[in-house]
Length: 264
Image 1 (cartoon, rainbow, N blue to C red):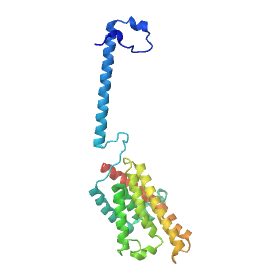
Image 2 (image 1 turned 90 degrees about the vertical axis):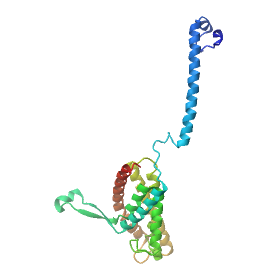
Image 3 (image 1 turned 60 degrees about the horizontal axis):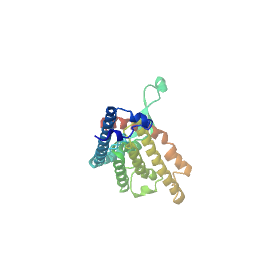
């Protein structure tokens, strides 16, 4: 044990006189407590280093409790194939919903069409379930299949489809699918985040489509079926947008339930 008389004062508020008359037994207890505190601090430092090493080894991010799920490669390929099938099928399947409740009394309980297909819904659903890579692969495959001549687009297929005013929206599927899939897996699954992801993806589709539409209008024109740029914007963006919003809500709900069931 060190010389108790030379032991430094534990607190600067204690005067030299008070410390000088302090019994040696008390000083011994204080010295022992200081040693225990130093030992505990050393143990804490050791635990901190071990904990840091474990976080690095296990790739745990304690400051990111909402770390997103990253699908493995086989799952990505599976969702890409399923997304391609869903997109092709959704192209030819009209979207519908229940009629407004206030119309049930006169016309009865019925179904009404939304004026759009489930094509966009299939694109966004694949993104919400399979992630950005699966969604990207599925839409690249879809566009390439259509350009090779397979009638997977709503008006057929082939390279001549490049001259269609709405082809930019098909290119937008690639961009919108990636954006939606990227955002959908940034956090743990939440209904609000899935809706936001789908809306961003939908806006991405329309943005690319409008850019292509304007570019085509300024270069080759929009063809005989479209009289003006504004008419093209109305036909391909403004008219289908409300129905697509309804599809987005349905897709977000389906994706939320399925993601919860799959624990992703």
